[in-house]
Length: 111
Length: 115
Image: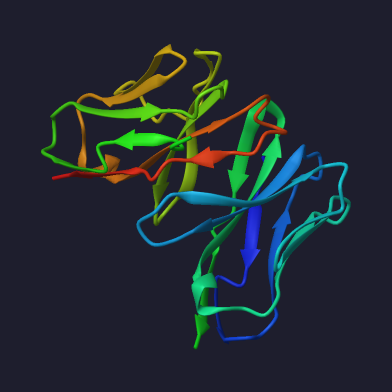
């Protein structure tokens, strides 16, 4: 059974700092990995989707990497802003179109 | 496109009542997923459909839960009878192509409180 772990559970940083969120998974036989953002009381917004054949994806100030062999992914946020404050979740796609979600990292960027 | 649309956004009901949650996926998407989110268990996949056909309902907690997708633009998740432990946020999501390679788009969720 696939298990997804995100570290840290919560992170507070000053505005402007570069930061890294971590995601690890137990079964390396994945199809893809997706990073989401969730604001309080809202749904999940897809940030980046990395296919299993890819090593990284970039969108603006966000960069996500994938290392299948070690079962790890990182989400790098450059020059963080208060508007980046949210919960970030990673989800691993495995067989049967099933996504397994991590518990999320709650990020607070202080002005 | 307006995105995935869910209704109601909030529902408060009493134990034993029937609850029906509704979802309109993004037009053209052929996969539809129902998830449940709680503090204790995080996000759990309940059921998903491909081209209106239920593919995997192994996440449905028990027979009190049922889901239908009568056409490509509408799905329902029904709980009958509801219990306090069903209180959660229920999300609908859709994707184009196989859910394994397609980006998943979520609705805003339906927050259910069962008293």
